[in-house]
Image (cartoon, rainbow, N blue to C red; front, side, top):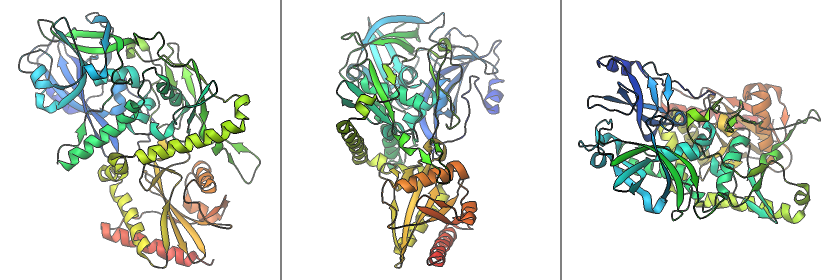
Length: 574
């Protein structure tokens, strides 16, 4: 599952007690903290964390002595929106100043850069270590090979870490980053469909909030843009982890927050930098600003586009009333500085509140105008409706077919390092045994399938509820479905199809709307629904299974298998 606890991102630098125990031993008259590097990313259970290198300094003017102490502290990846390289804090962790607007920072204007000409792998030891610079570092081998951009101007080298690109283009809200690193962006936003003079972007509010859909959709319309760079943020990270797993290496890697443009495209930008050697020949870039295309006046191919919520079709009608209730509610605000901020209780991780641009650094805030409704003149056009539906279906099939090894093995990989490992392994192993039972006909069914795995995205809110498994069992003339959630609730429900036919193998509307109702109105309380015998669209809840773990893994699997098999047999014919 994905993390689901709602929280604000911290401004204050929160350090462990052991860090202060070590820092107290250093005799500095004045003590400050400096974020000197953002390193590799890795999983702790099912949450992505980042190495954040923090250096104890005696000043806030980029004057680094030889005896400085640097610590490597893990923080959640989303925290890097606030914890940026070049930030200074007082000894207690209170934020002092970012590098980009520091009085000692230099700005180099109108620098030309491209992915193909300026992308490189930086060896920290060869380029920054061995006395070549005074930049504060731990042992150089701990950093690994670092993907970054570099520019040579008048014999001076300017190093642009990928976290600087991340801060400008992708750290526009905590959920923007979240949707990219956890791969929700790919199924959540469909590539644009162009009809006459209109461009329509479909998105799914069950997967992604409107505010972030507005932010991320604009990347589709960048002139000389490459939307695959956004897809690659997640996919390349997983591939690196898989490769390292095969080679028995540490499961951590730099996430490739590369420029969202074609590799040959020439981009113009300003660099906020400071020298890290005495001669001023090696310079660290802490921020970029004023990004533009020298060959074009406009950054985008169009001035307007339309955002269409596909999950407006998930409007759920309560069968006991005439009231129509929306599925997931979302909202967005514009603060005084024009930054877009999420404002919803449905997120795992509320976006930064009261963002002050002068503190957070330059951001990619430019965007075409976004309309939230398809004009009636085209909405009522039958040709548009048919082609638009086909366009969305073709996109879904293309991303499913494109799923590479890293996407195919995603769930198994995450399960292997997740705190829910035993729970999910028990369920999947019990399902394997049920498939072998001759009297049962079993298979997995899907709503919105997660890659090529056996998991589906939760139809109400994937960010909060995580993934679900839908396992169908046909016995005699009855059809059942076992619903298990890969989240902390560890609740399993067994439902029975009512009416003619059975559950559709993919995109069963009754099943989808019913699960939304179970989530929203009944808080996934399968036990209570079992007692009430309430008809919910095309099914009724007939059993609930909790506390599936026993003394050993094998006992747990056998117990769950027997409980399900016995329940199905006892229920059939009732």
